[in-house]
Image (tube, rainbow, N blue to C red; front, side, top):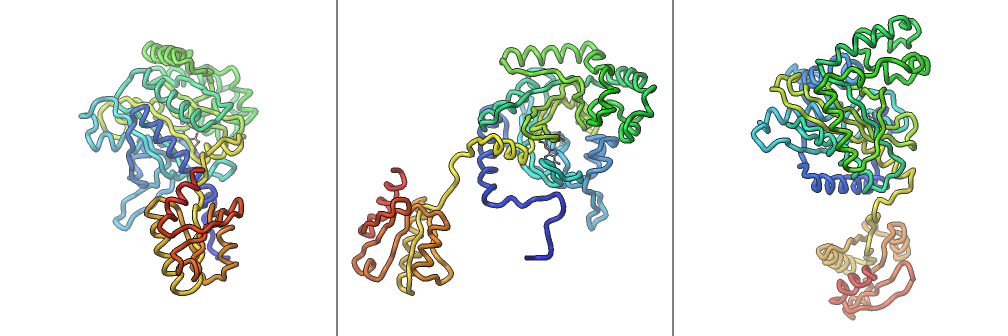
Length: 422
Ligand code: AMP
């Protein structure tokens, strides 16, 4: 065992799991195509300022959770904690306002947050991120929600609930904030220390605190949707109409305010009863002021991010199918110098034909090679003995039935192909 271990809160995704990830990523890419979202690959680190200004300096993510470092040129860089800010940065920098609007993008990759690790919560985790930038239309919010629901449906996930809310905009939010602070003032001493510190800076977040005392206090707190300005109200109505048109079931959660400052109007989550405390499979909403916050022109946008680890975890718990696990089709057994050369050639022939194949590279005995074929889960074994080679034949053993036949060498590929489709 090596004494150096992976840092706390990160995981290795080993082959037993990585094929499941590949299935989810492939499904995401198909859904993206059907909803006309194009894939982008963005940098894993950005200028710290992007997140400090975009995500909001009083958010937990920016205050406590970012991996910030200085590069050799003295620049402050940050490992991205989320993707929306990078997406909008890329939209602005690459003048995507010149393209047909909204620009619909998606991406998948690792995010980094210095959080307390627990089930479904890691310090490096993957997100699937979908963003539609350049439209105010509430039907784009509907589309984004529908896309996430469709993704989870295709993955076979069950028991998911869509919860929505509207957190207003810079016009109506201050009015709500004042009402909320007034409501909370008499209870200030009873709130948990985190919420007490949020009271002045970010009282909205007190609404989604999990502490039972805080929850009891905020039970009848002023709701954001009771304070929406006419524009936000109309937008929220539009969102509900669109969801109804699609027959998408949802409920309104007045506590849903989400952790990042940039959200305006729509906030939503898809939650799973199977995930415990970290129950959000995906979360998102509208961020009409993000572009301006990072120094661009006003550009409305809406999107969501889904945690890949949480998707896989939920699917495993629900016994969902990840498709067929890729498996080895042929193992070539050969002893001796000459036979091994023939085996190399045969294996190459198989591989070129798209038949997955492998052989022993550790000088194992015949028995050892058969055992290895078994351990690797090979569907068949091709045996290349001295006699077989002389007779230009190959012995092919079906590892499930144990049946063994001799086949002329030139027919091996056709024979195996037919066998594999049986
Ligand atoms: P957020 O960017 O905080 O809105 O999170 C969006 C989604 O990313 C969540 O719903 C989770 O599925 C996932 N997520 C967020 N933080 C973590 C984490 N620390 N570990 C694993 N998944 C996470």
